[in-house]
View (cartoon, rainbow, N blue to C red):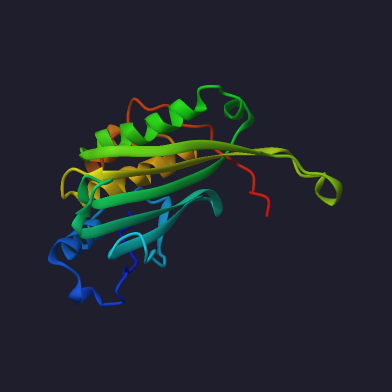
Length: 216
């Protein structure tokens, strides 16, 4: 199972020890998150203008050496709180994967993609408030020297929410499950959940997996 890597980046340029205790505890909680093994996490530079304190990770979903999905998660903290958040923490995520043709034309794709995130948060018992986001599809057609490449369509889920609890490990684990679903991986079974301390998304219908390299 993958554990959290990375480092905090504070907008004021201070070190981790100078961060508020609430922020340090949030990072410690995230460090204890357990994700399915296909999700690989890496540290990333955190934004410095959205909040006084921030922590960022990038993730890829890899199966047999092929990247099926990728994304980014940022945890923001403003000790004074922000009115738009209705709280002092905010989770901001982006998740992206290529779609198979049978999914690309689904008129309900937006609603389904958003439901995947909401179901993942609920399955992990991650309390949240003020959720917002977009689900986009991007179709690409290739011409000229690139004409031999097949047309492709990507889904991109951008979302943010205010944690209504301090179980930041659950929020990270839920996002990890969203990455897996977008990559077309089967939901974690009840047996696997018992072994990995990860709740099952048993009722979620996964996306057909992308099995060809993403064009560059």
